[in-house]
Image 1 (cartoon, rainbow, N blue to C red):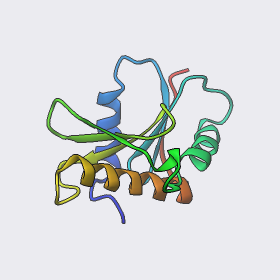
Image 2 (cartoon, rainbow, N blue to C red):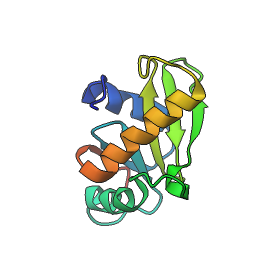
Image 3 (cartoon, rainbow, N blue to C red):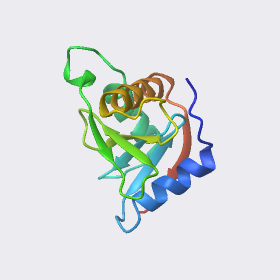
Image 4 (tube, rainbow, N blue to C red):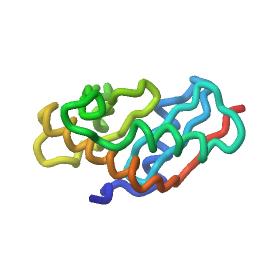
Length: 127
């Protein structure tokens, strides 16, 4: 399931969301962002290691849990999981059902795709 949002829009969205944080971050193809508290070396590789461990969904474990945060500007939601620095953006037009359960499951599935595909589309280096 590819995101209906293009990479440029995703990058702009994450730049706005993380503006002023001073954090480095890495964006993956389906909208999952890994924020790096302690950036070191190759940021894409560091983020891949985190997402390889914390991206794939394993139902009935902490990896299946999620929380949905509605963005104030009404552009969508953020779906968090069991790692505090791994967050997936879900735009308003995904999914068709805007309930928190549907959004959370959709965001979790996007995180799973990013965690198994590990396709980096952008690195923001704030070091």
